[in-house]
Amino acid sequence: DRCADGYHSFPFCYRIPISPATTQNPAVPSPGHIDGSRCRPGYFGTHCQPCQCSTYGSYQDTCHPTSGQCDCRSGFIGQQCDRCISTSSTFPHCQGVIDECDPAGTR
Image 1 (cartoon, rainbow, N blue to C red):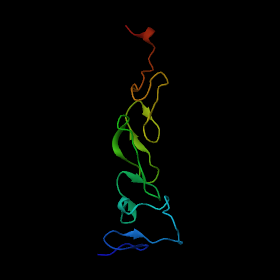
Image 2 (image 1 turned 120 degrees about the vertical axis):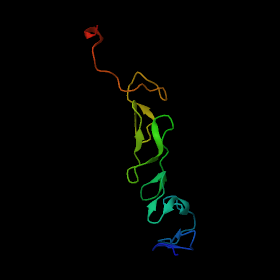
Image 3 (image 1 turned 180 degrees about the vertical axis):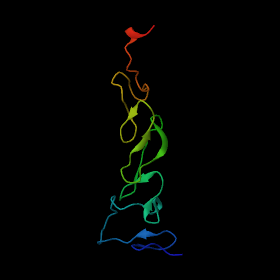
Image 4 (image 1 turned 135 degrees about the vertical axis):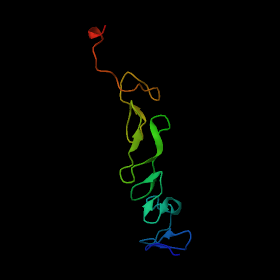
């Protein structure tokens, strides 16, 4: 096998620098985070940034490959599901969806 276009040194497949650089550029994805031409699960975006989904607020540690949005549990919001929907809750003790019913109307 061989590396994809723009990469070298199979099987490690390091990205070929676009311009000479004396220091490592943090905007260039790490070789270990690239699977073909896409980021591996758990990484997103053109630079393969880690998802960093909250273990409390997210269903899993992977995110949308382009936007980085994690899959939030009920009661949690934010790209990394690290905030509460309810302002009366404090992360990570977020309440689920709050019932909109008026308690005065219940029996």
